[in-house]
Image (tube, rainbow, N blue to C red; front, side, top):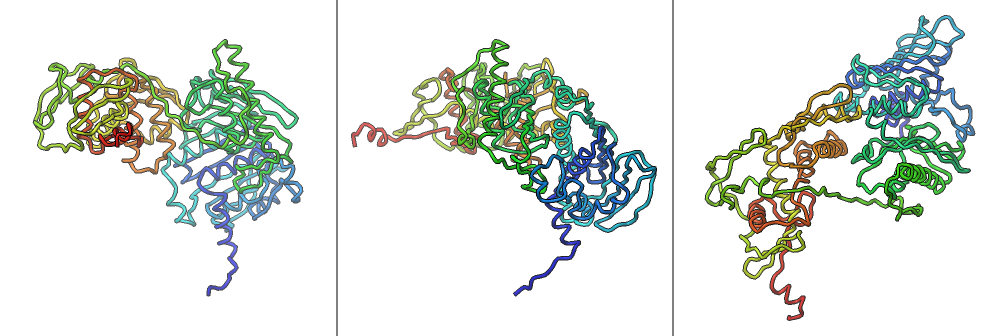
Length: 603
């Protein structure tokens, strides 16, 4: 039987640090919040190698008294509270007294600080929890903290960090959120010596949005300001044009503290459903001002989770505030609005997840998309004769040569006899005593999917040059992600170039996506890859891209000619997995004569 041991101080501190210091972005969050609490007006953040090599935060705040420099690194030391009662009225960003001690236990830290009333400041350096030196130093008023070699004392933690770009994307996300919640402070973020983010600290949310997200976002905002006895909600929500396929651009503050709260995000999204019928997540930056005793921020050391004393009332405040702002905006702009959902959404429904898949209706010629279709002869190529049409493309004009290949593909179901099309959505056919009902959209989606994945794997994706290149403005996080995954995009047929600031120019897209908006398909791919993260296997990510790109497939409620239906059925027969679409829905349903006789109660 193992005996109970008392952990030594070093081991205890490193274990405790795991809750506070998850990655470089965690360090930056804690250091910036300290600068905010010190009444800083200008904060400069310098990052090298995604924070793995070094991080430096320089502010012009109140500074630390030289006699308190060493105490600042002791566990549970804080200038924010004096007793447990103070937690009920916390207004500062930090209060737990864990951040500096935790950071210093897993990294090398150098801190210099000076207060206004002193002629000299003081400098201290701590490596892995052990003090190396402390001395007087001449610096301007404020604090300069330099953190380097993070996790040098914990190699097991270091190996779990991601690439430099990925880690920096976490950092820029943290800095962005904090900057949006502290508009009277100027933030300057540098990546490997280059300034990548700046806010002027003049108190304007729209100017901050312009600096961080760009002109397209800043010009499509709706102001929100609403108050009840409980509190006040203020900020902006975005028009439909800047909605995204994920929640990355949703920012919530409670008393200017950045938080993550699923309930409140759903409150905003439900308010949007009354006006904008779109299956994307709205952009918003909202601050909820409540009495401190109505909020518990002491839930987790990272202080991003909160609990509300009056949860239902807070939900109502957010929903009603956003709903009213949208109603006034659409009324003013004279847009047609849908008011069937204007009644207040019940609190209990906030937790119900509803996933809608939107389909883009576009003109489509099945034959022009099908390389197994002979346009001139108006008939199908017989795969069993080992022939296939090889197309080459130049300026969107196709030429073809018939070539031989060495293998025969195995049919997964017999050749079907066409009966016809039902409801412009389903192909009805038969073989012997079996009735086959084929979902034309799902079937063609799977045909395109398998071909595209095969082309990607074999590096044979054919791209088309856009006659008018698409200039796409992205957020800083999106730009970093795009360039980190540039090879993935290029392998899949998306070619783009840098266009300055946070902008790229998309020049080529996969040929088979047809008439779908190049910008729309690129953003869908980007947002879904972001949701997956960089850690996914490359094959999984390729499959996701192919699934999205298959929106170009023939749609339901679309007339098909007899030749088109036969072509689609023949192509489907030879797929590796023809019976489900990329999303897992069935492509074919089969009924026997007995099934039909049972329906009519013949047996």
